[in-house]
Length: 312
Length: 263
Ligand SMILES: Cc1cc2nc3c(=O)[nH]c(=O)nc-3n(C[C@H](O)[C@H](O)[C@H](O)COP(=O)(O)OP(=O)(O)OC[C@H]3O[C@@H](n4cnc5c(N)ncnc54)[C@H](O)[C@@H]3O)c2cc1C
Ligand SMILES: Nc1ncnc2c1ncn2[C@@H]1O[C@H](COP(=O)(O)O)[C@@H](O)[C@H]1O
Image (tube, rainbow over all chains, first blue to last red; front, side, top):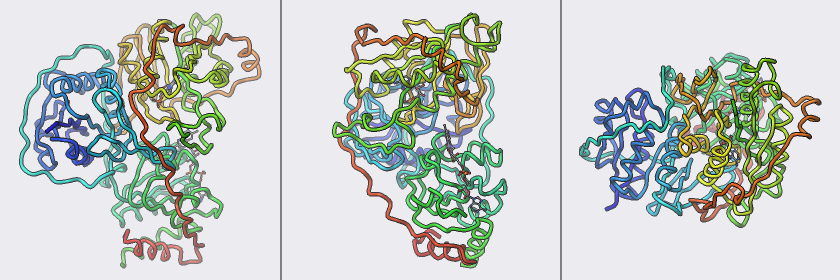
């Protein structure tokens, strides 16, 4: 059976659910080989047995944390040359897409980004133009390299421990950029924005007070998002911005509170399965995409809803 | 320093976008504008030059040049003109019928060939084109040219022959540095793009826009490494329910969530 490579993304050695999604997609195409390009492999390997992975390749010999995107693409290209996989799957993050882009150049292979599905014949599904159009594409040249958005598939559990192989690589110096310091994004107690099945977001309408938004998110076990107006004002960290220049989310439920629904915001949330909007202005464009809208003051509606859910 | 800024002409963000029967974005029937994220790239290039100019200004007398590079149909020169009116010095538009349907690999191949011709020290890009939304062209350019990749910059500092940025992604903030030459892409929080002044608009009319074909560049292109099989409009979201809060908005919301089994 052919093999499929998946790149193991991680934050400080913690492997996100998105890697399990890559494995689940990959299994449709072939045996899944997970590639680790990190000094934290000792912490990462045990976490991978949770997923449907048959083999792990640890790339040794490069200080990946120092060399950023270029070095990871280089190592991955070497693994591709060695394994001749049927496809390479990577998570659609800013970093993941850049690695995929450099890898595509190195392997002279086609690239599809931001896919939400891929079948056994490597036909990828993308949702484009703010979710208004669904596109099916294939790679016509080289090894298919596809980046997949997280939260696109139910993760299939692994069975048994994958075999582990070390693979020696050395830095070729192509990317001369060096990382001199890192400040990891602060992680709160709430679920990660792009992985959460429910997202509650606040905008300018919160007037800087996110307490009712956070309280409602917490009764639902949701992640908290924000519009650019809210992140620009410093009310919420930029890492929580949803939209064209923030994160793209596609949860089961998206609740927009005090957000007008500008096209740049909608670009990041329009593919959510169910959309709820709370806005004082009955003409707010967010209502055009909402399945359920409450025309009202978020400071009245949200606390009442939180109370109601606690009682339920 | 020789600086290049890569800009793309894209359909207006507000325009409704559709796929043509050929599986490509139907560009003919929508208003086209300069990709708004590329305005931040133009602004940052101007800022870099201003910081190193004896007069504090870009343009003649600064000792540095800013060249705008764009690949696209001939009318892409309209978008390029905007970058010139902001203060860039001159522009190159790569236009060729054979380039229709180019994907990111093809785009980066062509742009890299032109950048190599010009021998630029710094190439500034936006982080994303609002139509393709791939965010991969800058990284591909770095790979093709062997330039240092300094992308998703929230700040840029150029110091003699080295350049430092703070990279802002979902993973947090990384400080990065490299010797020149470098490919930089800038996030939209980095600056506030200037509006072209009247003087700038008038001056831009006299600036040179050179149009080049693939033959001029000396490359032959494979237009795409991927193929669209089919595309379909998603059924529009069914008109949702809108209720007014009459003191019971929160309860109605709870009822909706329970009915949909979302809570
Ligand atoms: C290049 C570029 C990139 C951008 N990228 C993004 C992006 O990634 N994400 C993003 O979100 N935006 C982005 N924007 C900005 C976008 O255009 C809008 O400006 C922004 O989304 C507006 O945020 P908002 O809806 O919170 O604020 P506003 O548009 O000011 O809307 C506030 C809403 O709150 C309502 N309201 C006020 N008080 C209350 C109350 N008490 N209760 C209920 N409702 C209330 C008002 O009726 C109004 O509809 C971008 C813009 C540009 C130019
Ligand atoms: N056709 C093009 N011509 C010039 N620059 C481009 C072109 N396409 C993309 N770019 C640059 O690459 C950046 C990222 O684009 P993309 O990878 O398409 O999202 C843009 O912000 C531009 O700076």
